[in-house]
View (cartoon, rainbow, N blue to C red):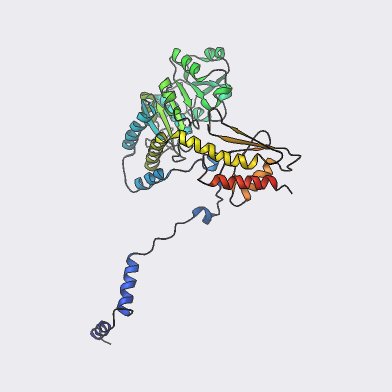
Length: 407
């Protein structure tokens, strides 16, 4: 058939239910295809997901970001900007919120510790910046950092990475004897404040008396919200905090805040600058903005209401377990780090023939999978501040079932 005849034949067909109608329907559907179903990548890859009744542990991917943080990350992923300009603007806002002279977003609290100390060591001297972590004294830098022996729990590695020598002390007399011309700073690990002989106030006072920078790690030490500015107002030279724990920002983000000159020098030791100790500690624009929005939301939260919610949730679990013969439950609040209602559970092994490892393994392999942490008394601890609404009922039911199922 000729083209003219084909067109004429099609034109004679009815529009409804005919070829034209079908073509129009196909064209409309093709122009607006249905959105593809969201992929469950964890499921695709065979990676276990679980209810987090343990807390904000890094290995468990810490916390879940708020929807506002996720939206900030998604929106900023579609535009370019200059990284240093973004750090400038966000740093100003964070400094205002935390009552610090200056601030910056880092790739976690560990990175904040390294960069902050690097800033103290090098200042804005480019030659010194490029020298780290070697030959500190040869490059004209101080080379020792003092901290309490009980504060050496692993995170001091972040300081040691700059090339300094760590000097551990126990008493005030030890501290005063250790201070010398090589002392670059005095570092305080806040989560272990109660285990040392020198408190944060006295530590700072001795540092200030000797004109030495005092620094502090408060990685997991909110709540309370006031800790976000407490140590800045006290006069600590810099403060490092994790962004992906209670603040619920990106897990790979953190905040370094403190004295203006130290933060400025830390920025020079950081990405995107080359030949620096922090070049590999880069933080992208999405993380910077996500951290900013997370901090805003955390400060604006009604923390009294939030605390009451946690108490109600922990009560659901406690009420389900405390009536079981042989089980002992106690609600505790850790004094500093992870300062939230925590249920401490133990049981009489002669009545419940189950070890805490066996109990935790059952939770892990069950449906849904649940994570808790063991305690020193052979039981487990559980928290609720990382639970989604309603999950406390699921957790309570599973705990009770597993403790009663000892055959």
